[in-house]
Image 1 (cartoon, rainbow, N blue to C red):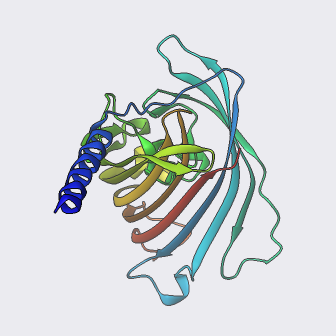
Image 2: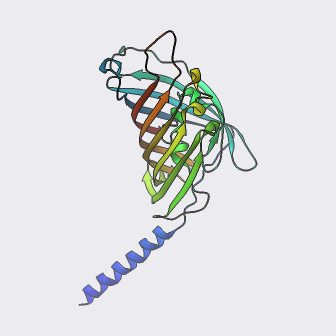
Image 3: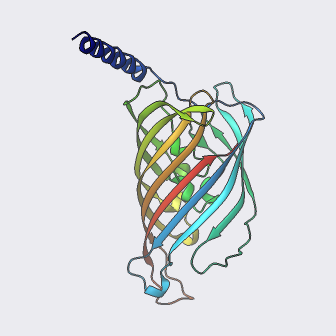
Length: 277
Protein backbone atom coordinates (compact mmCIF):
# COMPACT_ATOMS: atom_id res chain seq x y z
CA UNK A 1 0.00 0.00 0.00
CA UNK A 2 2.83 2.38 0.95
CA UNK A 3 4.66 1.59 -2.28
CA UNK A 4 1.51 2.28 -4.29
CA UNK A 5 0.95 5.58 -2.50
CA UNK A 6 4.57 6.56 -3.05
CA UNK A 7 4.37 5.71 -6.76
CA UNK A 8 1.24 7.82 -7.15
CA UNK A 9 2.88 10.72 -5.30
CA UNK A 10 6.04 10.54 -7.45
CA UNK A 11 3.94 10.43 -10.62
CA UNK A 12 2.02 13.48 -9.46
CA UNK A 13 5.24 15.38 -8.78
CA UNK A 14 6.57 14.38 -12.22
CA UNK A 15 3.40 15.60 -13.95
CA UNK A 16 3.53 18.89 -12.06
CA UNK A 17 7.18 19.36 -13.00
CA UNK A 18 6.46 18.56 -16.65
CA UNK A 19 3.53 20.95 -16.68
CA UNK A 20 5.77 23.66 -15.30
CA UNK A 21 8.30 23.11 -18.10
CA UNK A 22 5.68 23.03 -20.84
CA UNK A 23 3.97 26.17 -19.50
CA UNK A 24 7.17 28.24 -19.58
CA UNK A 25 7.01 31.09 -22.05
CA UNK A 26 9.67 31.07 -24.78
CA UNK A 27 10.92 34.20 -26.52
CA UNK A 28 11.74 33.41 -30.15
CA UNK A 29 13.69 36.10 -31.99
CA UNK A 30 16.71 36.40 -34.26
CA UNK A 31 19.87 37.74 -32.63
CA UNK A 32 22.33 39.62 -34.84
CA UNK A 33 25.99 40.37 -34.20
CA UNK A 34 27.89 42.66 -36.57
CA UNK A 35 30.45 40.76 -38.67
CA UNK A 36 29.02 37.32 -37.86
CA UNK A 37 28.69 34.84 -40.73
CA UNK A 38 26.30 31.87 -40.82
CA UNK A 39 26.33 29.24 -43.55
CA UNK A 40 23.49 26.98 -44.68
CA UNK A 41 23.09 24.08 -47.08
CA UNK A 42 19.96 24.46 -49.21
CA UNK A 43 18.33 21.74 -51.32
CA UNK A 44 15.15 22.24 -53.35
CA UNK A 45 13.24 19.66 -55.34
CA UNK A 46 10.76 20.89 -57.98
CA UNK A 47 8.33 18.91 -60.09
CA UNK A 48 6.32 20.84 -62.69
CA UNK A 49 3.51 19.95 -65.07
CA UNK A 50 1.39 21.94 -67.53
CA UNK A 51 -2.15 20.56 -67.91
CA UNK A 52 -3.53 20.98 -71.39
CA UNK A 53 -0.13 21.22 -73.07
CA UNK A 54 1.13 18.54 -75.49
CA UNK A 55 3.06 15.72 -73.89
CA UNK A 56 6.26 16.82 -75.60
CA UNK A 57 6.02 20.24 -73.93
CA UNK A 58 5.88 18.78 -70.41
CA UNK A 59 8.89 19.08 -68.12
CA UNK A 60 9.95 15.53 -67.25
CA UNK A 61 10.78 14.32 -63.75
CA UNK A 62 11.99 16.29 -60.75
CA UNK A 63 14.61 19.01 -60.92
CA UNK A 64 16.98 19.32 -57.94
CA UNK A 65 18.64 22.62 -57.04
CA UNK A 66 21.36 22.74 -54.37
CA UNK A 67 23.44 25.62 -53.08
CA UNK A 68 25.45 27.02 -50.19
CA UNK A 69 24.13 30.19 -48.60
CA UNK A 70 26.20 32.53 -46.43
CA UNK A 71 24.65 35.31 -44.36
CA UNK A 72 26.96 38.09 -43.13
CA UNK A 73 25.66 40.71 -40.71
CA UNK A 74 26.81 44.08 -42.07
CA UNK A 75 25.20 46.24 -39.41
CA UNK A 76 22.76 45.99 -36.50
CA UNK A 77 20.13 48.74 -36.44
CA UNK A 78 18.78 50.46 -33.29
CA UNK A 79 15.52 48.48 -33.38
CA UNK A 80 17.40 45.16 -33.35
CA UNK A 81 16.97 44.42 -37.06
CA UNK A 82 20.03 43.99 -39.27
CA UNK A 83 21.41 44.61 -42.73
CA UNK A 84 22.55 41.23 -44.04
CA UNK A 85 24.63 40.34 -47.08
CA UNK A 86 23.44 37.06 -48.55
CA UNK A 87 25.69 35.13 -50.91
CA UNK A 88 24.43 32.04 -52.72
CA UNK A 89 27.22 29.94 -54.22
CA UNK A 90 27.91 26.41 -55.46
CA UNK A 91 24.49 26.47 -57.12
CA UNK A 92 23.87 23.30 -59.08
CA UNK A 93 20.89 21.90 -60.96
CA UNK A 94 20.21 18.31 -61.90
CA UNK A 95 17.31 16.49 -63.47
CA UNK A 96 16.14 14.45 -66.45
CA UNK A 97 17.82 15.59 -69.63
CA UNK A 98 20.48 17.67 -67.87
CA UNK A 99 24.20 16.83 -68.23
CA UNK A 100 25.47 14.85 -65.26
CA UNK A 101 28.59 17.01 -64.99
CA UNK A 102 26.78 20.31 -65.24
CA UNK A 103 28.99 22.96 -63.62
CA UNK A 104 28.03 25.33 -60.84
CA UNK A 105 26.16 28.50 -61.72
CA UNK A 106 27.76 31.87 -60.85
CA UNK A 107 27.48 33.02 -57.23
CA UNK A 108 24.93 35.74 -56.51
CA UNK A 109 24.95 38.31 -53.74
CA UNK A 110 22.28 40.66 -52.40
CA UNK A 111 21.66 42.75 -49.30
CA UNK A 112 18.45 42.50 -47.27
CA UNK A 113 17.10 43.91 -44.03
CA UNK A 114 15.83 41.32 -41.56
CA UNK A 115 13.77 42.07 -38.46
CA UNK A 116 14.04 40.19 -35.18
CA UNK A 117 10.92 38.18 -36.08
CA UNK A 118 12.40 37.10 -39.44
CA UNK A 119 10.71 39.39 -41.94
CA UNK A 120 12.90 40.48 -44.85
CA UNK A 121 12.84 43.42 -47.23
CA UNK A 122 14.94 44.41 -50.25
CA UNK A 123 17.40 42.37 -52.26
CA UNK A 124 15.18 41.39 -55.15
CA UNK A 125 14.86 37.76 -54.05
CA UNK A 126 12.06 37.07 -56.51
CA UNK A 127 14.17 38.15 -59.46
CA UNK A 128 17.12 36.04 -58.35
CA UNK A 129 15.11 32.89 -57.87
CA UNK A 130 12.62 33.30 -60.69
CA UNK A 131 9.86 34.36 -58.30
CA UNK A 132 10.13 31.31 -56.05
CA UNK A 133 11.56 33.44 -53.25
CA UNK A 134 8.08 34.78 -52.61
CA UNK A 135 6.96 31.44 -51.18
CA UNK A 136 7.51 30.59 -47.52
CA UNK A 137 9.82 27.66 -47.39
CA UNK A 138 11.27 28.34 -50.84
CA UNK A 139 13.07 31.47 -49.71
CA UNK A 140 16.73 30.30 -49.68
CA UNK A 141 17.39 32.37 -46.57
CA UNK A 142 14.88 30.27 -44.71
CA UNK A 143 13.64 33.46 -43.09
CA UNK A 144 10.19 33.55 -44.62
CA UNK A 145 9.89 29.90 -43.68
CA UNK A 146 10.35 30.84 -40.03
CA UNK A 147 8.54 34.08 -39.26
CA UNK A 148 8.53 34.27 -35.47
CA UNK A 149 5.94 35.61 -33.01
CA UNK A 150 6.34 39.16 -31.72
CA UNK A 151 5.65 38.00 -28.15
CA UNK A 152 6.69 35.14 -25.93
CA UNK A 153 4.74 31.90 -26.52
CA UNK A 154 4.41 28.56 -24.78
CA UNK A 155 4.22 24.97 -26.03
CA UNK A 156 0.94 24.34 -27.84
CA UNK A 157 0.28 28.02 -28.50
CA UNK A 158 -0.58 29.17 -32.04
CA UNK A 159 0.04 32.54 -33.68
CA UNK A 160 -1.21 33.90 -37.00
CA UNK A 161 0.44 36.40 -39.33
CA UNK A 162 -0.25 37.91 -42.75
CA UNK A 163 3.09 38.45 -44.52
CA UNK A 164 3.09 41.07 -47.34
CA UNK A 165 5.10 39.98 -50.37
CA UNK A 166 7.49 42.13 -52.49
CA UNK A 167 6.17 44.52 -55.17
CA UNK A 168 2.73 44.55 -53.52
CA UNK A 169 1.96 41.25 -55.28
CA UNK A 170 -0.13 39.85 -52.42
CA UNK A 171 0.27 38.34 -48.99
CA UNK A 172 0.87 34.97 -47.38
CA UNK A 173 -1.25 33.88 -44.42
CA UNK A 174 0.77 31.85 -41.92
CA UNK A 175 -0.47 29.81 -38.96
CA UNK A 176 2.31 28.63 -36.64
CA UNK A 177 2.35 26.44 -33.53
CA UNK A 178 5.14 25.86 -31.01
CA UNK A 179 5.40 22.07 -30.71
CA UNK A 180 8.37 21.83 -28.32
CA UNK A 181 10.34 24.41 -26.36
CA UNK A 182 13.80 22.88 -25.92
CA UNK A 183 14.79 19.77 -27.85
CA UNK A 184 18.48 18.66 -27.76
CA UNK A 185 20.10 19.44 -31.12
CA UNK A 186 23.86 19.11 -31.37
CA UNK A 187 25.49 21.33 -28.73
CA UNK A 188 22.37 23.43 -28.22
CA UNK A 189 18.62 23.10 -27.80
CA UNK A 190 15.98 24.05 -30.33
CA UNK A 191 12.33 24.99 -30.32
CA UNK A 192 10.26 23.02 -32.82
CA UNK A 193 7.71 25.00 -34.81
CA UNK A 194 5.04 23.82 -37.24
CA UNK A 195 3.81 26.30 -39.82
CA UNK A 196 1.18 26.16 -42.54
CA UNK A 197 0.83 28.87 -45.18
CA UNK A 198 -1.40 29.82 -48.10
CA UNK A 199 -2.07 32.77 -50.34
CA UNK A 200 -2.72 34.14 -53.81
CA UNK A 201 -0.07 36.25 -55.57
CA UNK A 202 -0.09 38.46 -58.67
CA UNK A 203 2.57 37.01 -60.99
CA UNK A 204 2.98 40.19 -63.04
CA UNK A 205 3.77 42.28 -59.95
CA UNK A 206 5.94 39.54 -58.47
CA UNK A 207 8.19 39.56 -61.54
CA UNK A 208 8.40 43.34 -61.57
CA UNK A 209 5.64 44.25 -63.99
CA UNK A 210 5.18 41.10 -66.00
CA UNK A 211 7.75 40.22 -68.65
CA UNK A 212 6.45 40.65 -72.18
CA UNK A 213 3.19 42.19 -70.99
CA UNK A 214 2.03 38.91 -69.47
CA UNK A 215 -0.20 38.56 -66.44
CA UNK A 216 -1.53 35.89 -64.14
CA UNK A 217 -1.82 34.72 -60.59
CA UNK A 218 -0.64 31.90 -58.38
CA UNK A 219 -2.36 30.02 -55.56
CA UNK A 220 0.03 28.37 -53.17
CA UNK A 221 -0.12 26.41 -49.97
CA UNK A 222 2.26 24.34 -47.91
CA UNK A 223 3.70 23.50 -44.52
CA UNK A 224 7.05 23.60 -42.73
CA UNK A 225 8.74 22.13 -39.69
CA UNK A 226 11.42 24.41 -38.25
CA UNK A 227 14.01 24.08 -35.50
CA UNK A 228 15.05 27.42 -34.00
CA UNK A 229 17.61 28.02 -31.23
CA UNK A 230 16.31 30.66 -28.77
CA UNK A 231 19.71 30.98 -27.05
CA UNK A 232 21.59 31.52 -30.30
CA UNK A 233 18.79 33.41 -32.02
CA UNK A 234 19.30 31.38 -35.19
CA UNK A 235 17.39 29.06 -37.47
CA UNK A 236 19.04 25.63 -37.36
CA UNK A 237 16.96 23.60 -39.77
CA UNK A 238 13.75 23.69 -41.77
CA UNK A 239 11.94 21.20 -44.01
CA UNK A 240 9.07 22.42 -46.15
CA UNK A 241 6.59 21.20 -48.73
CA UNK A 242 4.72 23.57 -51.02
CA UNK A 243 2.42 23.33 -54.00
CA UNK A 244 1.49 26.08 -56.44
CA UNK A 245 -1.04 26.45 -59.26
CA UNK A 246 -0.14 29.21 -61.72
CA UNK A 247 -2.43 30.70 -64.37
CA UNK A 248 -0.64 32.84 -66.98
CA UNK A 249 -1.74 34.86 -70.01
CA UNK A 250 0.47 36.43 -72.67
CA UNK A 251 -0.38 38.65 -75.68
CA UNK A 252 -0.42 36.93 -79.10
CA UNK A 253 3.07 36.60 -80.57
CA UNK A 254 3.19 37.61 -84.27
CA UNK A 255 6.34 35.50 -84.70
CA UNK A 256 4.56 32.39 -83.39
CA UNK A 257 1.02 32.46 -84.76
CA UNK A 258 -1.24 29.91 -83.18
CA UNK A 259 0.90 29.66 -80.02
CA UNK A 260 -1.23 29.38 -76.86
CA UNK A 261 -1.79 32.64 -75.00
CA UNK A 262 -3.00 30.97 -71.80
CA UNK A 263 -1.12 28.42 -69.77
CA UNK A 264 -1.61 26.61 -66.48
CA UNK A 265 1.29 25.22 -64.47
CA UNK A 266 1.35 23.01 -61.39
CA UNK A 267 4.44 22.91 -59.22
CA UNK A 268 5.27 20.75 -56.20
CA UNK A 269 8.32 21.63 -54.14
CA UNK A 270 10.32 20.32 -51.22
CA UNK A 271 12.85 22.58 -49.50
CA UNK A 272 15.47 21.66 -46.90
CA UNK A 273 17.68 24.24 -45.20
CA UNK A 274 20.34 23.13 -42.68
CA UNK A 275 22.82 25.29 -40.78
CA UNK A 276 26.38 24.04 -41.32
CA UNK A 277 28.37 26.79 -39.56
